[in-house]
Length: 245
Image (cartoon, rainbow, N blue to C red; front, side):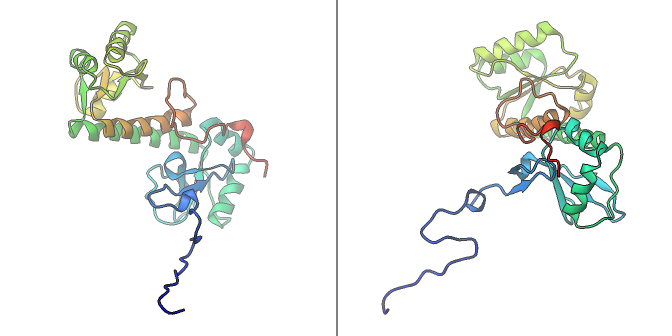
């Protein structure tokens, strides 16, 4: 019919209807956990990569080339599936090969990689000037409402934590800071500073980046207490929920 333009239907597009959430512009691609079968965003799962020698290795930054396999369970569930042989079977299906070697300490390697990702992120934010250390500086910033995330080293004194938490609440912050699962020497090394006991993120975007990396690590090692909504690792994907298949 003259004067009338026909709309061309693009791949994965339904004319006259909204596109699925995973296909909408700006939406995060979803992946499926090979153990629980649950779908979640790439950033909320952990990618495993297959090396040229058939060795499986964690790829928590999702940058390694080639086909990947995704998991959304914690370490206890992963190791339970590994002990029963279910993990290797799931990996062979995901990688479409029988030449898969799963290291006995895969759970520890993933935990170490997630921990390194958090420490590296903190180091980057420190160099960018997005965080504060030192109780006095943090307390002043917290009372002014300038703190977006507060972290305490695992060996921080209870009185010091309580004082800064109260200052943060006064500045309309959260109920309490998060306890970092490592002592002050580890934090100090990551930030390149001396005797780091408390860390305050004073940039909202930086706080979101650190919180996400922190949540992924804590969720995998099974210490979700005190985490806010949005923690990584698929909710409910524990050892008892791993598929039998």
